[in-house]
Amino acid sequence: MVIICKYLVPKGFEGITLFPFILLKSEDCKKNVYLVNHERIHLRQQLELLIVFFYVWYVIDFMRHFILTKNTKEAYKHILFEVEAYSNEHNLTYLKTRKIYSFLRNNT
Image (cartoon, rainbow, N blue to C red; front, side, top):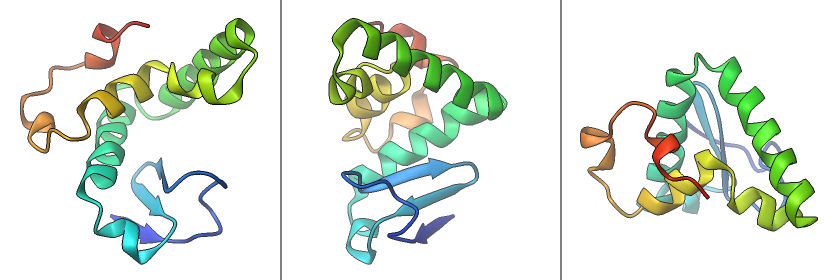
């Protein structure tokens, strides 16, 4: 389910996925099929890790990369889940062929 709520999406982002919702900053974002696909990839990742483990892993991976780079934007770009989502957001059929735990195959 896609919800428009500019107040829940962090500044600098267009969308965020909090299972089972995709929160978008504006109605225009809903028309961006690549953004919605990116967020749908996160929904699949969250399901695979029983939701709570996704968030724990996400934070730990961010912290690990932040310690290495000392840069929040760089740390975010290197999170395993984001690497997979950004790498495949333009492939609108990706979720039909995606293998389980595919985020592990995109090591950075």
